Length: 222
Ligand SMILES: Nc1ncnc2c1ncn2[C@@H]1O[C@H](COP(=O)(O)OP(=O)(O)OP(=O)(O)O)[C@@H](O)[C@H]1O
Ligand SMILES: [Mg+2]
Image 1 (tube, rainbow, N blue to C red):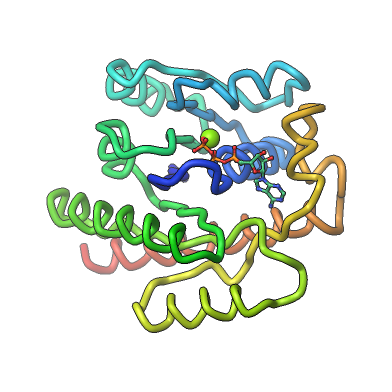
Image 2: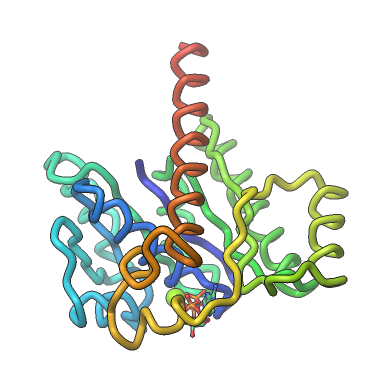
C-alpha cells in the first residue's frame, strides 16, 4: 500500500506514526520504502540510528519527488511506500495525496489541530475529484491522554458532528514514541505485544482493512 502521513500542522505526530508503521511492516518481512519529504530530514536521521532490515529510508528534494516515486514504484522493489510530509501545505502534499491508497491525518484532540486537519481533508477531496478516484483518509488522534478527558470527548463529538472518519485506534501519549527518535528503536521493538507496540499493530491492521475495502470497491466499480 501507498500511505501518506499528512497534516498542515507541525508536531502532531506525522513522522512518529510514519516511522512506527513503516518499521512494523518491515519487521513483518515486507519490503518498505519510506520517503522523507521533510527538509528537516527527521526520519532520514532516525533511520541511521538503528537500521531495520527491509526498510529503506530516503530523503528526497520536493522537486525530485515525482520522478523518484515513479521510478521506485515501477521497479517493483517494494511492497509498501510510506510518505512523511512536512508540517505545511506545499506542492509535495498534493503530489503525494494523488498517489496514495490511504492518507493518515494525525491530530491532537484540540480545536486548532482539528481545524488544520479539516484543511487537509478538503485538499484530499479536491485531489480525489481531480484524479476521479476515491482517496480513503482517516484522522488519527495522537498523544491522547490514557484517561478520556473533556478535551478528547470534545474531539470525538466534533468529528462526529462534521462527519469526519476517524481511526478507532488512537495513539496514547507514551514515552516509547518519544524514545524512538533518541535510540532509533520503533515501539514494536521496545514494547512488543503491549503499550505502544500493540497500539501500532492495531493501527496497522485497521489501515490494511481500509485499503483492502477501498480496493475491493474500486474493482467492483470496474
Ligand atoms: N503518541 C505520542 N506519545 C508521546 N510523544 C509523541 C507521540 N507522538 C509524537 N510524539 C512526540 O511529539 C513530537 C512531534 O512528533 P513528530 O515529529 O512525529 O510530529 P510531526 O507531525 O512529524 O512534526 P513536523 O510537522 O514538525 O514534522 C516528537 O517529539 C515526538 O516524539
Ligand atoms: Mg515530521
